[in-house]
Image 1 (cartoon, helix red, strand yellow):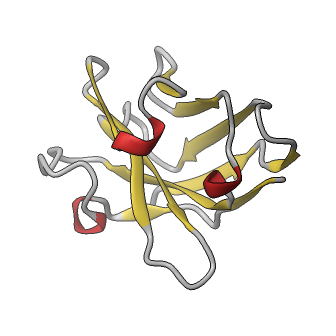
Image 2: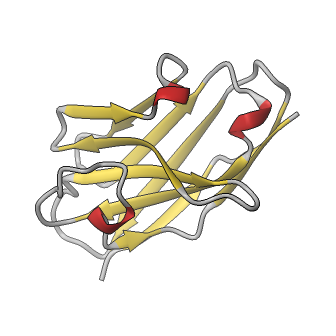
Length: 124
């Protein structure tokens, strides 16, 4: 049973940076597909970034050039470096993972079977 735990959220002024971390446990092998989603109050959850198979990375248009997703060599941790943060980045950020084949639609919630509890990011 895969468990995901996020950390690194907080409050920051516009233009600042945060680094989110997500640790996967309960699975003996590397996790091939990991992503970050976010949900602002009153809004639907949306894909932010994803990494597939240690090689391919994907980003939503609003965060391209500002956010960077990366994964550790063991395939058990994923990070989201967020720079030049804007107030519109304020949301609960969720880590997501799929341990089997990556579905191919990285921004689709249905492509991921495991979710963390979320970490709040507030940009003022």
